[in-house]
Image 1 (cartoon, rainbow over the protein chains, first blue to last red):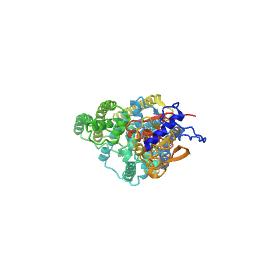
Image 2: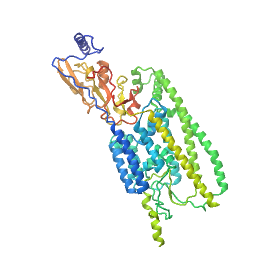
Image 3: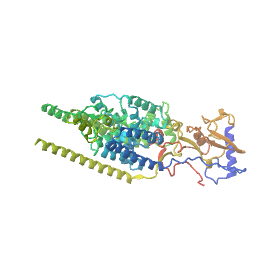
Image 4: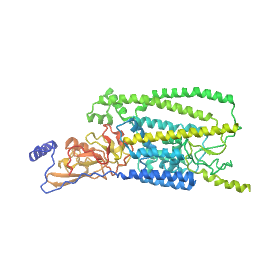
Amino acid sequence: MKKSLVYILLMFFLTIQGLTLEAQRFPKPEFENGHTQPAVQQAEPRSNTWEWVDIFVLFASLTVVSWLVIKKRSRRGVLYMSVFSILYFGFFREGCICSVGSVQNVTLALFNPGYVIPVSAILFFILPLIFTLFFGRTFCAGVCPLGAIQDLVAIRPMEIKPWLQKTLGILPFVYLGLAVLYSATASDFVICRYDPFIGIYRLDGTFLMFVIGGLLLLMGVFIARPYCRFLCPYGVLLNWVSRFSKNHLTITPSSCIECRLCEHSCPYGAIEKPVSENYKLDRKLMVRRFLSLAVIIPVLITVGAWTGYQISDELAMVNPKVSMANQLSEAEDNPERELTLNVESFRSSGKPAAEIYEEAKDLLGDFSTGSTLLGAFIGLIIGLTLASLAKFKYRQDFEPNKGNCLSCARCIDFCPVEKDGIFEKNNLT
Amino acid sequence: MAKSSKNTKVDRRSFLNKGVRLSMLVGLGGLGGTLLSNSTSVEMTWQLDASKCVQCGQCATSCVVSPSAVKCMHVFDMCGYCDLCGGYFRPGAKNLTTAAENQLCPTAAIERKYIEKPYFEYHIESELCIGCGKCVKGCGSFGNGSMQLQVNHELCVNCNECSIARACPVDAFSRVPVTDPYLFNGIMKTD
């Protein structure tokens, strides 16, 4: 019944329309009652102008927060800017594009000339780094929407033991390394995929996104800014740049009186205590430490590189092409097994499997180089972390650690010293 | 003596800092310049090539927006206005009526409208469509292929990396300029 109907219809159309139109099974009819055909629903993409507004707002808020931290020394101001950032970059612009994710766009553009990088991604990557070079990590303080939301929930921060903080501090390097590896091979943007707060900003997202986001915020009540300190890959770059910043937040506006009021004020454990010159380590011990580090660091790099090389195939499975090639060859080897959705879909496209095998082979080669380098890099970072634990540095005052300090300006309110040392003068007279 | 050595130490440190800062600035400038020379002022957005699409159904499940920003769009220029529509009716449907048991669409998002004998027009209700591509498959295998899956740019949040693009088994997703944001398959009159 159905088949015959098809043929009747087919014959009908063919006789009426002839074969003048393109080879369609059922050519479009001419309507006798003058019916006009509706237009295809094509919604216009979101306007391009917002991109430029975003860049302007980023520049403006970086300027304002830097001024608030360095000149005005106002925690309250930074707090208001955090709220603004959550509202604008977060809820209004729905968290994309952000500086943290732009690392991947930049990497992809550097390794794949075919990828056309948007101007906004470049500027979101570069601008915060330049500001950090001059004013410290003011971007983290009140511009980054991911940081801002965590800053607001840091109600009961606990102090974390320095050894634990240092150990967890290795994680961002691993994350950065993986993100660079995966974006350089055009596999995936892992930072975006596991962005913890974008689901909250969009009020929509996968279950996993909400679980990660919720857990981090819950954790953030007690361990302040867990994502920024122990995961954020962009923070690694900001940390490096911030160490050489021209200006940086200071706890005291003039000179430190070592009153220790600010000692526990930093929720991020970024205040360095004074180290007395009397506290000197045994020279012999220092030499021994130096020598053992000189042995340990190359060993760590080698072990890292070897591990990276060993697990490169597993890391490559994240790449959709490698994974697809793997599924296809598995299906070829086990013809009796039921086809997976991906294999079935790929076969129905009629593409030759040899093509994707070739691509996957090249990718596996890239991955084995990439993950060897990644392993070596992580080995080096672990070694340098060890070295930094063994380092001895004389310090007179309470100072923020320029690398780790997020310039949130909380400590400023704890300092009793006023500008031009008024407090000291009053006490003296 | 001790004092002067301390001074030179401070100077050396600030000199090094300055040097590193300057080289970082130059490096960032160079990087920015290189990238800008390869960038575009035209924003890019995601779209799927309807000619590559095999309707595996993962557009419906992989999008970060729920329901998916991928919708079925109907290219009326290609439609045969069939009574027995492969996109509308489930294979083996008993009667060609709008009764629920005859429909292929799981959310009844296709509206069947009588035009004149024997033609019917099919409208996709975008709010109901989940982008599963069942009708697209039906229309493509039986009819003209006028029903096609496309990213609806009103709903798409234009993620930095499209999560459907990663799941797509036939590599149909790519970044396209916003000035030309649809990739329909086949004929379409522009006027």
